[in-house]
Amino acid sequence: MNMRKWLSITLAFCMLLTMLCACGNQTASEAAASGESSAETEQAEATAPKIGISFPNDSETKWLKDSAIMTENIQAAGFEYELMFASDSADTQKEQIKAMISDGCTVLIVAAVDPNDMARAFNNSSIGTTIGGGSADNEATDSSAESAEESSVDSESEPVIETDDSLPIDDGLTVIAYDRLITDCSAIDYYVGFDGYEAGYLQASYVEDLLSLYDTTEVYNIELFFGDTTDIEAEYQYQGAMEVLQIYLDAGVLNIPSGQVNFSDCSVLTADEASSRMETLLKNSEDAEQLDAVICAEDWMAQAITEPLFASYNGAVYPLITGKGCDAESVNHVVFDGTQSMTLLLDCTGMAEEAAAAAVTFMNGEIPEETDSLENGQITVPASLFFPEEVFAANYREMLIQRGYFAEDEDGTLSSLTDYTMGYVAPIEDEMTLDENENAVNSGTVSADDASTDNSTE
Image 1 (spheres, rainbow, N blue to C red):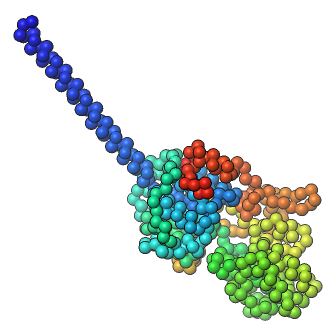
Image 2: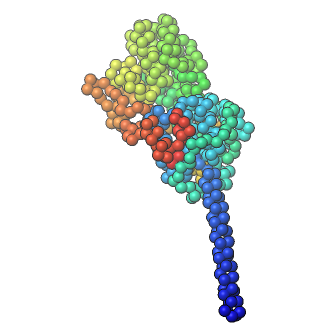
Image 3: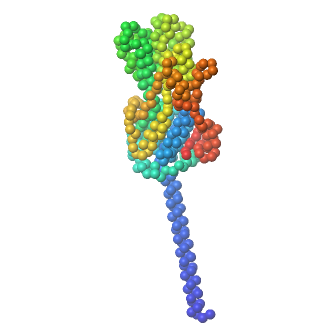
C-alpha cells in the first residue's frame, strides 16, 4: 500500500470518529435538557395552585353529594383540587388543612367540624387573611387554569406538618366557609350557606299571622326555645324572630310569662334540657293555663317539649309550635296531629355549585359578586345565602311529596325518601359509599393517608 492511500484511509477514519463523538455529545446535551424540562414540569405541576375542600365526614349523604358536585364543577373549570374528610374530628380537620396549604391549595372550602375551634386556629396564625384579598394577590393564579389538567395529586404520604393549634395562613390564601359560618375570625373571605336570620323571621311571622297580632286587642302568651349561645347561626335565628316579636312585646300584645326573653335565657343544647325547661315553665300557673305559642328553633326542640305539654298543660287550646329541619317525626306531627304547627325546609339544591363557582372565581384572581353579607363578630363576610321555606299542613304535598322529599306509606303516614332531608329534592343515586371510597383509593381516583381520612383529587 502506498503512502498516499494509507494517509487517505487514516484521514477518513479520523473524520468518522469526530462525527461519532459530536453526535454522542449532542445526544447527552439533549438528554440533559430534556431531563431539566421534565423536572421543571413536574415541579410546576406540584406547585400549581389548587382548591382544597375540607368536609366533616364521608359517612353522611350531604357531604358525599356536595363533594361530588363541587369536584365536578371545579374540574370542569380547569382546576385541580384536594378533597379531605375529617372523620368528625376538629383536630384532624386542622391537620388536613395544614397539609392542603402545604400542597399548594390557595383557596379552601371549609365546612368546619367545630366552627369555634376552627376560628381559634385561624386567629392563632401570625398573619391574617384580608377579605377578598387571597386570590387576587396570587400572581400564579391566572395561568394555572390554562395549564391545569384533569390529574390527581398523590397525597398518600402527607408532608411533615406542625401540630400546634394554628393554621399557616397568609394573604395568598382565601377561605370560603361552607354551610357553617366561622365566627370571630378575620380570615374568612366568603360564606355559602343558609340564612339563619330568615329562619327565625319566618317562624315568628307564622305566629304573627296565625294569632293576627297586628289586629287584636287580646294578650297572647309565648315562650322561646333557641340553640347554643356560641353558635352564630342560632343567634341570627333568635335575632330574626325578635325583629317580628319585639314590637308586640313592647306593645303588650305578646307576653312572656317566664320573663326569659334574652337569647341566653332561652338557649337549650339537648332534647332533655328542652324537655326539662318546658316542665319548669309549666309550673308557672300562667303558662300552664294559657300558652298560645312556643317558638322552637329546631324540630328536635318541638319534639322534646311535646311530652311535658301533654302531661301538664291545662289550657283550652294547644299552643302553636314551630320547628326547623323537616325531620320525619315532626313532619308527621305537622300534617296529622297538630302537636307541631310548622317546620322549615332547607333545600340545599344549588349550594355546592355556588361554593365551587366562588372558589373558581377566587382562583381566577377575581372576587365573587356580593349579594348578601353577614357579621361574624369581627368582620362583615360577603355571602351567598340560601333561604328556608315554610312547611305546614296546608302545603306539605306541594313542598315535600311533589318535590320528592317524602312519600305516603300504606298506613297513611309520611316517610322520608332521603337520608338527608335538609338537602336534595330526590333520593341520592350512585353516591360514593365508604366501601366504594376504599375501592377508589385502590384504583387511584382517591388517595388516603389512612382508612378514616380521605384525601381526594381527581
